[in-house]
Image (cartoon, rainbow, N blue to C red; front, top):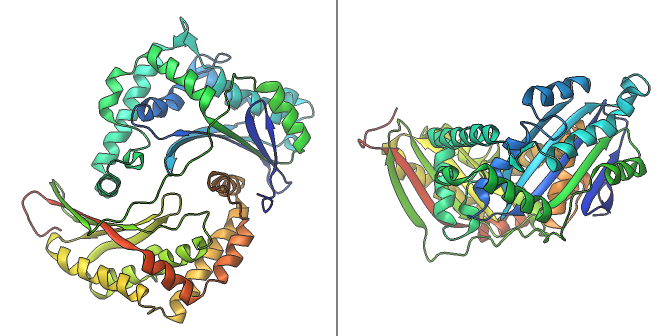
Length: 431
């Protein structure tokens, strides 16, 4: 991890990463809590941050909790729940104005107060009778249910999730990071609080602070404010890429949709920690990652077969997903052209323009990371997850050095694993 500008130390069982910089006007704080992605815990784990945001021991009422953020000069607080490989990650974020922009001595130091608020929110929740507040639990179970229902109603997201479920059947990665609607009724204030206590004790915790700070001051503040009982957390395990199938799995599903969704899961056994990771980024960019890509140009523009056609690559799990929205009657034509593009790449038919444009866009994205403290934090955390730290500059240089043969080598590793097609119930021709 020496490539990173972050300075690190373990404090009270939590890994602390500090980026001292005067570039930003705020203290950007992220706390990542990672746990294994497991069917028996995924839903309850997902509900936990929703309940924590309702109030803490210091500010047990939601109104007081939010008022405290206003008192901290309009600090912003939020969280995300997602998966990286076979890990369920909950990320808490707090953005508070830097000390140099507030009156001297205000709130005893903005960074101190920001850390107290964030750590208090996560480690000292609002309780009643020794368990989570019942009205908060019931309300936030409904919130999670609505989010899961929204993902079902959004047929692009639904088709992507269903393709993953079929592709990773039997693998924890098939699970939605927010869990399952059917698990919600069994969650009670008591069972959720028990799950929370175990989660807090066992989760891998990484606290990031970026801003006009000194590492020693941050380490001292964390020691002062974080005192949860911790066990030695298990290291992150990303899980295995999909195992090769003798032939592609084909799944067709009919729902009330007006546009077909053709999703193709590709086994691409290159992980973010591998030497070929930069080449895999370029491969995906040429295949479907950008507007000049083969899928966009040939499936959408030239053949006019798709409303959208793109691909995304997951270096934490070793697969790529092709997504397209098509007229139902064009499924076979679209699939044929997609297969042609995969064969083009495996055969080395890559133009100089495709290679140059893809590299330029990837490098541009990496260069833009320095404009956001939270983007820099997220990039560094990805290196923590994989165990291989690259700075954005190092990854950009590696991308620029990718040769056509490197892309072809990756392309020949790609195997069509799962073909999922979502169509209308009536068998109509779509929009």
